[in-house]
Amino acid sequence: PQKQTVKVTFILRDGSRSEVDATVGDNLLDIILEHDVDIDGFGACEGTLACSTCHLIFKQEDYDKLPSKPTDEELDMLDLAFGLEDTSRLGCQVIVTKDLDGMVVTVPQGVADARSGPL
Ligand code: FES
Image 1 (cartoon, rainbow, N blue to C red):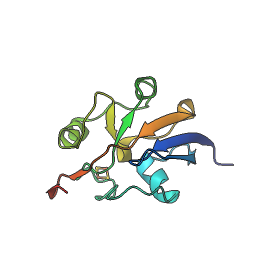
Image 2: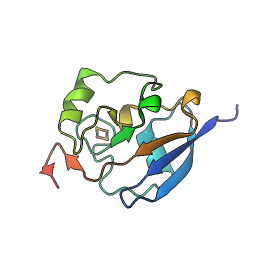
Image 3: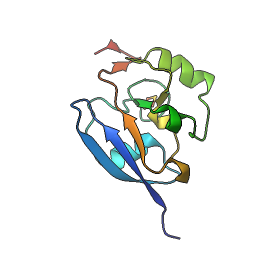
Image 4: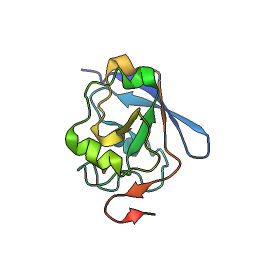
């Protein structure tokens, strides 16, 4: 079957926007890697919940539509993330669904790798 995709826009640190066709069922880390979205230091632990470099900030309306709530492990990791917001999630834990078509995700201005402290 044909892969379903939705539009996801990333607002990068320099304010530029990158719109990609995100495959439904993939997580945002995979999508960022697949589309070569250029975010320094992103996804350092390759989705194993051992860093917080995949931190992304969602609009409230999109955040409310995300298919899963953060686990305790994710929340612990988010606590270490740079620039935490109420609508922060770790990109590697967020699966794209059809409902999320058109969502806009902000890349935080800084990155902190929980394994090595702030960069
Ligand atoms: Fe490290 Fe998501 S890539 S926690």
